[in-house]
Length: 557
Ligand code: XMP
Image (cartoon, rainbow, N blue to C red; front, side, top):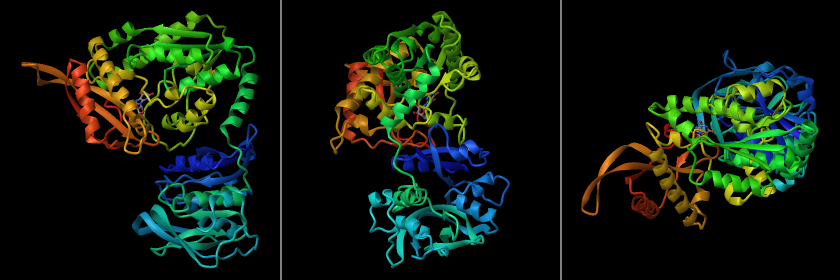
């Protein structure tokens, strides 16, 4: 399998570079920009062959201390390189060029014109790379590795830029092949080596021909072949898992979300089901009928050892009297660990058992572990670390079969494994569950009220269609109800009553890192609100949260 390595210097869009190339059918991996490039990394590992390296953008400048420097081996590897924004500036500064601050930042859509000129070495590489800019050449031709056929005319595209520095002097050996409307270098390449640089971001959809430009590098320059398909990945993963696990049992901690369900299905499909133990904790902070939904889905997938731990009361008493969101999260996290250790011991598995979890590629990034040194810690996932997990990791007995996949790839995998569409498409649900959606103290009564209201909301979203004929539930990335710690005045019949206030949240997002409010048709909101207040008698008022992320977060606590 061909692979492209991405050196991450901290840009917000590094992830997107990886996504776009995977969508083109080529496997990508992201490592910190200043990681040591060992021979194993440069040769490729586990059946993959490294074909090229991309140097990402960065919020830093190359001339400051914060601007990370790549291992020099990147330049002696002989592999094709593509520098994007900071990546290009880095290549320039590292080879004797000059990078300086712009008088005014370039931000947003800016025209870029490329000239159709060949490199001095006459290898046809420049032409091949510039094919990406040529609107007359379709993506399929570029993926097939079409030789450069750039028209003689200079061609112009609209590109997305975000930079405060520019190349005032190119490094020796480099030439400028494209310029921005503002007169700064936008495309540069080395005359002899397969090194290319873009001052703009091809990974951002606002850049015209962005995908084609990436494809020209990946297929035309690096010579990659399409080899990243989920079916093939399942096969390779299955072989590797069987070899690693042998006849030892595997315990998977299931949360009820898409990720752990897919991880469970994968284990059941690739290992003997007798070896697979699935453990699920009913914390009492779950959605309506969650435990039933989870067990039905897993039994359907052939689960033989499904351990459902009922610990509703333990969680409620740990939360008693707690109002502060962080105190609530900590109490839940601590109890989760205590119960996990107790119950695992109770199972009596031999010490040699493997512990599996449904960690995704983005979970590792969000936790600041493994990839993207500069990626900020967004939230702490309690599935990435616990004493049990740490001990198993130390013993080399952790299995994270989804840790190379993005969320939508996990959904795709779920479909291949035969998981019901309804489970595959479920919205994300946070580990601490309803506790972070009941503001203030959590009680059994409030859990029941919220569960009921949330179920109605979700049911409505599944039955209502958008003007385009799609279920609202599928248009929305995540939707849920939040119970506020206030009551407001209302009337029921002729009687004055104080009912709880419920907030509805619905957002659209690519990955949960940023989010926009879902623009409901007002009629839908009015009808949903009426049904909730008519059915859940303790709720007197419903409001809709119209905050995007940032500045708000998706969850309220
Ligand atoms: P925020 O609220 O940080 O949420 O904007 C981003 C995404 O993460 C989910 N979330 C969590 N998931 N454990 C989880 O497993 C948590 O503690 C947690 N907190 C938030 C949230 O539902 C959204 O999808």
